[in-house]
Length: 266
Image 1: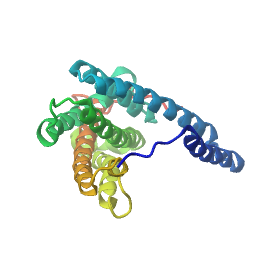
Image 2: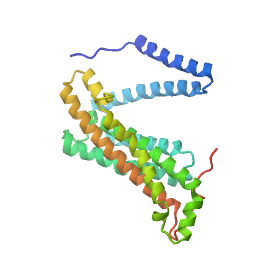
Image 3: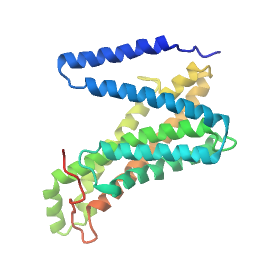
């Protein structure tokens, strides 16, 4: 089965729907029209560029090139996580924590999947490595961003209660335990909901893409199950790592809450 090619006219029609949405936003005063248009243009340019990069990458299977591509994806994802937070950690530590938490989770899970489960030869074959890493980073990025943003915001808003517990002799883990658990739930709930709804409410993207590309529905389902398990594990461990690292930054060795490292809300 051959994939039906899309023409520029087909894509233009889809773009018109986005412009219609932006016009509707302007008409009813949502204030989202500028962001809708900019996001649409940015997405188009980014996907066209990545398409050309992947075409060249697939033509020459090279570990250094795959590693460089993966590193670029990680650095951009780390910045997106850090930039999305309303009350973020100041300076390099905030960015390093965002990037490091995804490095610990997404890269470990991706390498495990490529070497043990998928069994690609070589294991860094771009056809498998880049899409898998991209899906893990994208979902882990959302989970870590949600959890991190809520943690810094809730710790700041409830600083009085946290400091009172510290004064009563509680450790920083005890004083912030319930807040940290709530933040972990916030970061992990989206992927849990996605797993619960997959196949009933929605057909996940990778499965849909494989079916449109002519793969057997059962083969597509197997890959989708694998990917959902990997995403859940990557997101969960990424959220846990981020919450732990941020918490260690917010409390010093003398069990004191340190809020000077947080940026102010603009």
